[in-house]
Each structure stands twice: as C-alpha cells, then as structure tokens.
Image (spheres, rainbow, N blue to C red):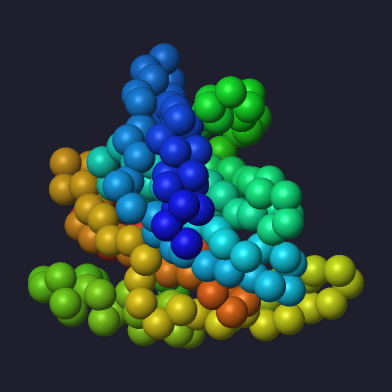
Length: 193
C-alpha cells in the first residue's frame, strides 16, 4: 500500500535523533529507505516498516511503525537504541524518547577468523555466523522460534573509526522482524568481530 508507506515515511522524517558521546551531540540521519517492510495478521498489523538513523557506521536507533488497528488507521511504534552511546529522539509531535543508558554491547564472535579482504567474503562470513544463532519470542504466553531472514537488511562501514564492515540481520515471525543481529568486522584493537 503506497499510502501507508508514505505515511510511515512521513512519521520517520519527522523523528529527529541525536547521539551523545560525552559532551558532544550529533544529529543522526534517517536512512533513505525502510530496512524492512512487513505485515503480521496474527497481531492485526496489516502493514509495517522498520526505519533506522545513523551517524557514519552502525545505525544508532531503529523504530518500527505499524498499523495498530487496521480498521481505524492508528499507527503504533516502538523505538530501540542500537548504539553504545546515549541516544534521544523527538518523535514528531508525540514527545521525546531518551533511554537512561545504552544497553547495546558488542560481543566477540567465538572461534572466528579475521575478516576476509573482500566485501563478498566478509558478507559470507557474517551470514555463516548469523546462521549459527537462533532466536525465539514469547507472546501471549507462547514461545515460538524466529526464523533468520536470508538477506541482510542493511550494510554499513566507518573506516575512520576502524569499522571495516557490518550488516544487520533480522529474525522474524513471518515477515515481522522481532530481533535484529548486528555482525561487524573491526580493525584489531578497535572493536569486535
């Protein structure tokens, strides 16, 4: 539905995101296209999309806009920080969101080799790692396994900070992303793979 996408884009464009590291604060830019587009009839979400904001490199925040009640045209949204620094968002006319701290943490990939020299080789390595993981969700008292979507949903890098390559992968119910996995390759001493 093109009208829904236009409405979700407008919600994303009116959300202003900043990331602060110490005393410095930078405005994050909205990534031009939604990372995901989905529907989830089991929850009455006839349409939804996930958007991200970034300062070079990994997105610092993601939000999901979805039809909360398909009969009334009401939009629901969830926000999540994907940064290891403080993030805040002004959601166009709906208030300010600022978590108390950064819950995001990179962890080393066990038994990993150094990243390959080529983009294609690094992507293969990141996908291999993602396939080794599993995820589940609990909703209305029932646990269900999530499936890893076969294609990364966002690719990024920031050579100035030592981030060689990174990709975001989604674990989903149907096409609805429930968990996001970031896999990154960093220069030695600047992060984790």
